[in-house]
Amino acid sequence: QNGLLHRFPELEAVPRFGLVHRLDAGTTGLLIVARTAAAHQRLTGDLQERRIRREYRAVTRGCPVAGGTIDQPLGRHPRDRLRVAVRPGGRSAVTHYRVLERFPANALVAVRLETGRTHQIRAHLAHVGYPLAGDSLYSRSRDGFGRPALHAGRLGTRHPATDRECNFEAPLPEDMCGLLTRLAGEERNWDDFSWSG
Image (cartoon, rainbow, N blue to C red; front, side, top):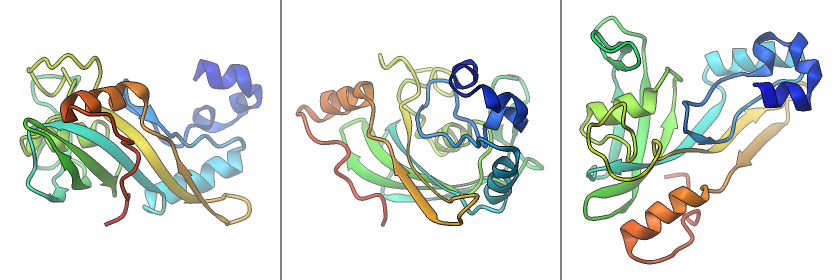
């Protein structure tokens, strides 16, 4: 937020300093920032109406079979205020995931959000038994990766002024590529997977 205000001082007049959504601490990748109040209103409305497409790459501990949809409500964890958990009466949360590559004890997965709850991907994948590598909040296992292995790699929306379709992609960061190379035992282009499917 401070970096945004330094670069774009006009954001001080925009609600939430232009931030349309957020990324969990440690998550890398794309973020939508509106530069005017009108754009912010349009984009936050699009987000609430599920018209913004957000896709992530994650490395899980454990290997899901293929993929699926997790449609479970999320609410505050009953004993740990820093976490969320699947809870009856929680807010609706829908996460779609697909396995891209399997390793002996991990998997690379593509994740698409329908909703955008706090820690949604992390809590949902942990709930079904596949917490993110490096996620000390949702897993007790220490695997040497210093943050949740989660990257917001693809984003699609309509431009708030022109209504033109806009699609953005961000390559996997070096640390996640290094993790995947260690898991696979070989270097590859880890961005060379189709997002759709």
